[in-house]
Amino acid sequence: MGITDRIVLLVIVFGLVVTLIWFLRALAGYPRDPAASTPAAAVEGDLTHRMAPPKLGWNWGAFFLGPLWYFLRGLWVYAVILTILIMLSGGILLPFVMIYAGLKATETLEDARLARHTVY
Image 1: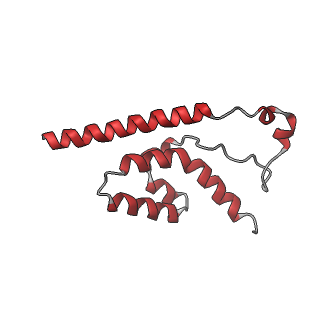
Image 2 (image 1 turned 30 degrees about the vertical axis):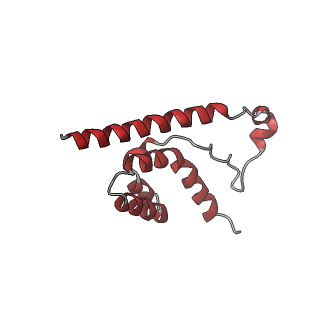
């Protein structure tokens, strides 16, 4: 492994650490909603009578499989977009695509299921 490879690896690791710290601070900064723990919040659901998916949940399968996970779940538009993003960047954006997939996959899948069963 040459010096250039080590520098690129260090920049990627540094970027991932900074992104992780930023996400943790951003999530900690959100105010806790006292109305979310009331009995009315338990009754309130979306059109399929399920609660809305949590924002920025974590999905290990989507994290490790990335665009393949989206394709296997039938979300081929997301799979194509993420694959093109990885290919155009030469693989440099792969860690960021993995983090995005891990954070947003559950919410995206739930939104797609909701959209399939509603008319709007």
